[in-house]
Length: 398
Image 1 (tube, rainbow, N blue to C red):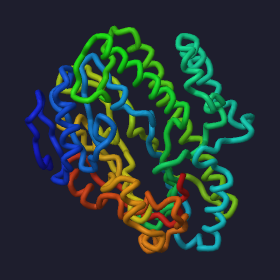
Image 2 (cartoon, rainbow, N blue to C red):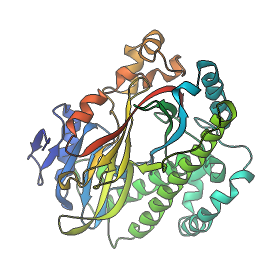
Image 3 (cartoon, one colour):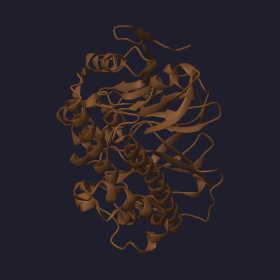
C-alpha cells in the first residue's frame, strides 16, 4: 500500500498517494469530501495539484450526481501511443528535424484547424446526428460553439496548452509516437455550457456549496441526461481526434524515415472524463480529473514533461484508487510562475537533446514547472507496473 496520507476533515475520507500536497489542493480535496453524494472516499493521485473547484489528479466516485466542472472543459483529454518497428539505428538528427517540420505542417496546433474538411468527413460522419440532436434541444449551444462550429475541421488537431506530439525511444531502442490532446474547442464549449447550467440549478434550489465550481447535476434533474449525452459525445470525439492525429503523425514519419509498421496495438486512453462503473458494491459515476483508468491489465500512458521520460504502464486494479492512477508528472507551479522564474536559456538547457521549440512562447511548459515523474511513479507502485520507458527526442507543442 502506498497511500501516503488520509485526510478526515470532511464527511468522507480523502486518500492521497503523495506527501507533496499544497494547501490549496488540500482545501479542494476536503471540499469535495463534504459533498453528500461522494461514494466511499475521494482518491488523490501522486500528481495531484490545484484545479478549478476540484483538484487535477483526483478520482471522484459519486452516487446519482455528476460535477461538470470536475470533469472539466477539456472533455476527453488523454493520450495515445504507438510502437513502431523502427530502431534507433535507422534514424538520424537530420531526418528527425524533417519529421519535426513535417508534423508541424500536417497537424494544426494552437487555435488552428484543418482548412479542407473533405479528407475528414468519413471520420466525422458518426458524430453529426448526435450533435444535431443535442443542439436542437439546446440551441444556445450553437452560440457557445462560436468559431468552433466547424467542428469537422478540428478532428486531427492538437490544440494548445500542455498538448503535444512526441517521437520517442523505448528501453530496447524502438521508436514510438506519443501524443496528448482532447475534444478541442467544441468540447470546451460543451463543458462551459453545462457548468453554467449546473450553477444556475444550485442558485435556483438554494443549495450552499463549499465552492461554486462544485455545482452538480443530480440524476433525474432537467439537464442530467443531456449532459451525459453531451459529455459522452465529446469523449468519443476526443478519442477519434487522437486516432486521426496518430495517422497524420505516422504518415509524417513515413515520408522521411525508412519503411516501418506499427508493432503493437495503439494505446488510447482518456484522463479527463466521467464513466459509469462498479465500485465497492455499487454502480456509480467515476470522474477522473487528471487520472487514467488502471483496472487489472489495462494499458495506460503516463507522460513526463518536455525533458523527462514517460511510461507505458499496466494497471493493477487497486480498488482503493477506484482502479486509477496518475496521468502525468503534474504541475509544480502555475504557468505564470514558470514564465516569471525561468528563461529561454533555462528551457534550452532542460530540453537538451530534444528537437522542440525553445522560445518564450512555450516557457510555461518547461520541465522545471513539473513534478519529478520518477517520484510520481514510485508513489504509485501499488497502482501500476511499468511496461515501457520512453525518452523523447522530438516534441511538437501546441
